[in-house]
Amino acid sequence: MPTKKTLLLIALLFVISFSTTFFIMRSNDHKECGVVIKKEMDKNGIEVTKEEHVCKEKYSF
Picture (spheres, rainbow, N blue to C red):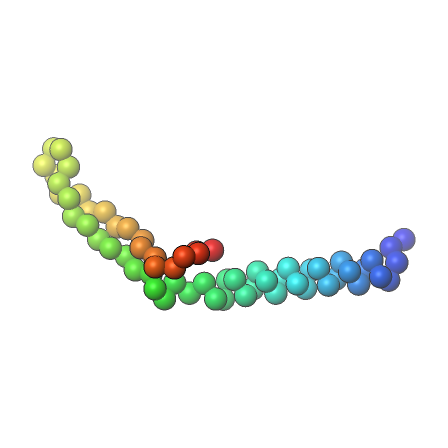
């Protein structure tokens, strides 16, 4: 049977992991991101629309 110290350590790791995941999800708001729409002609002469997601952030989770 696990000791109280082991159970406390497991609970602490769970809380830290949950808090870290919650922080990453809440702080990743993509304020500096945008969608760029490019219209190009393919080799058959048909106009093709491409959407690109552009971010200025160094890291994106």
